[in-house]
Amino acid sequence: MNPFKVFVVEDDPFYGEMLKYHISLNPDYVVEKFETGKDFLHNLYKNPSVISLDYSLPDMSGLDVLKKVKEFNPEIPVIIVSGQEDVSTAVILLKEGAYDYFVKDDDTKDRIWNALKNIREKVKLENQIDVLKEEIGKKYKFGNIIKGNSPEIKHIFALIEKAISTNIIVSIAGETGTGKDLVAKAIHYNSPRGKHPYIAINVSAIPKELIESELFGFEKGAFTGANTRKLGKFEEAGKGTLFLDEVGEMDLNMQAKLLRVLQERELTRIGGHHLVKVEARILVATNRNLAEEVQKGNFRQDLYYRLLGLPIFLPPLRNRGNDILILAKYFTDEFCEENNIPKKTISQHAQEKLLGYAYPGNARELKAMMELATVMSNTPVIDDTDISFSSPNRSNDFLLDAEDSLVGYNRKIIRYFLDKYDNNIIKVARKLDIGKSTIYRMMKNNEL
Amino acid sequence: MKTNKLYDLRQLIDIVGDEDGLQKMVTIFVESTPRIMDDLNENLLTNNFEMIAHNAHKMKASIDMMKIVSLHDVIRKIDKPEKVLENKTDLKEIVGFIKITLDSVFADLKKEFSL
Image 1 (cartoon, one colour):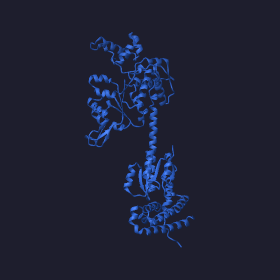
Image 2 (cartoon, chains in turn blue, red; image 1 turned 90 degrees about the vertical axis):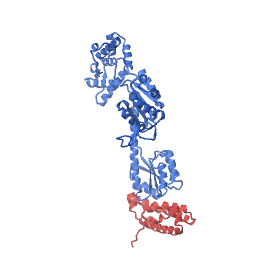
Image 3 (cartoon, chains in turn brown, blue; image 1 turned 60 degrees about the vertical axis):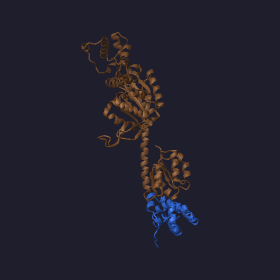
Image 4 (cartoon, rainbow over the protein chains, first blue to last red; image 1 turned 135 degrees about the vertical axis):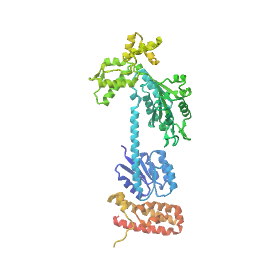
């Protein structure tokens, strides 16, 4: 860890030395003393952790020195130590960004001691937060979280790059389990906003009566039970990112309010009168086809265009070819590592089985499947018998249903065979003597 | 013959902790304060009230730290320009009293610490 550097700026040699002595009692502090403002400013490049500054120096006022420090680095805490018992001076200095203002008296040394202790704690915590943020940033480097090298996924990487370099709204679409939330995190943590908060909210998980207060916050007394002011997610996100997951589930009334906030870039808390500036970047995701929802009248057209921004459509896993095997290996290795199990390989038969499945739950389903297969496998190799598909079974008695159209029966037959053969599209296509692209097309169009 | 000292080093000992530190602090006090005192006298001769206040202000913290209680209130009579003006007629006496007291302190400290 970097040493905690304390600069004492004090023209009274006696008092300066006294402070130096006292502060140096803590072996973790490295103290340097300066008797003039000029000398101190020449050494400011050393970036002290904290400065104890005498208000009246021979060559410049404490206020001027403070301003120079703040110009150099506004984050360095400056404690003013002065013989002046003048409240107005203290107020001016505190307004200019001084950390604290102490009058020289018998308690000064203790006050400085405590202030240094508090500042050090704060610096330590801030450093820890920076390290954690960096760790999270690394974790969400998109090469680390989105696995694969299929053309489809390379296209997604290119889009994420574009999203990172601008502030454009990004709308992420894709089936459940395709990793929409991971893409949102990757965009946030790799963008210049990465050091600011990342706030995610799942619109479908919040009752519609509460969504407004969750997003916009409320003032004390705004409604029964509002005992304190609460900031909404927009405000919590600050200069970071707000990710609105399942935005397609938002009701029309709330959509209008959201549209206004996105247009005006400001909001009013429930029960409040003051406008609050919105600085957060907005990312949205949905597994619905919003264009269709607009047609059906379930989603506002103006909000749709507002949110469209840079659309990123995450392809379903079944369309990503060999990425299935890359992900299967990744999930297996990850599971083995987490559970201290020796790493396992995946047999040729198992690979073929994996490639033939349709993955309605996408990567999430594959992950669960590989974890189970790793547990079930008794050898260092995962075989096809260790892999079981777990999509919810559909009714097999479809032929007993009420009368249906030929198209409807076709759909039911294909669905029945998919269930019977663990969604192995190749096998089903062979059994029914139809092209596998027919099955893929029907899946894509949500016909199955 | 035992004389009453005009200073009390207990607070300083408490801060610096060891003999070496105390010796160093006392040396700094004995070397640096007379220079400010000389400036104060010079500024008194030229009626530079602002600088008189500046000098007094500078000595105040050291005087407090050395617990020279007889100067505690006196130095505060001239530690701001407006106070210097208020006490304009007594300035000579005030500065004179500070000098006599400090000279006595310096002499005792030099003796006690073999400076």
